Length: 140
Image (cartoon, rainbow, N blue to C red; front, side, top):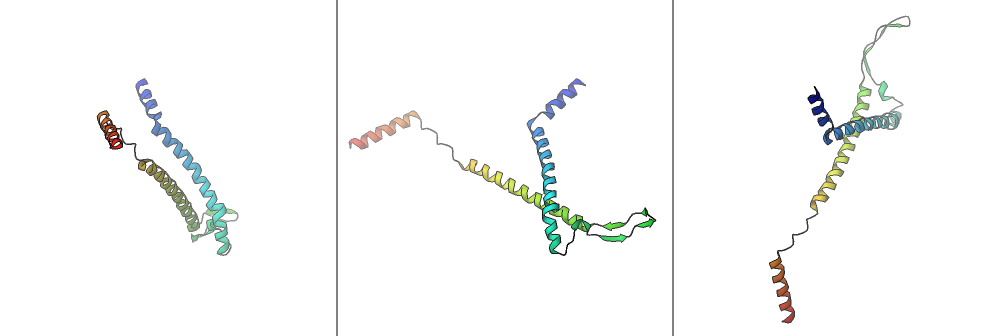
């Protein structure tokens, strides 16, 4: 049992697993921020432009709720396409932000790769011959 726990500890403490966990946590928080931007900042003006519609209220009711007094006996059945539109916009914005992030990271890594390494110093005998040649040119 101790061996399994030791192996799990080594697995969990590797850099890739920790980096992935941090990425997932930050991604979840980023998703909430984007959802708020879409729901609270983008969709209200769009809804206003098309006649004061709240997108989350857009739906096609297939079957109305059956009520008895104030009690719902059978809930309504509906296709909530407005919520689908909002979630789709969330996805598009998140995907675009990730695209820009990856594009920026790729351009930074290309710049690092494009920097040519310094040429290696020539061997000592070549350096000596070059110096002799330069001296002969000066004298000559």
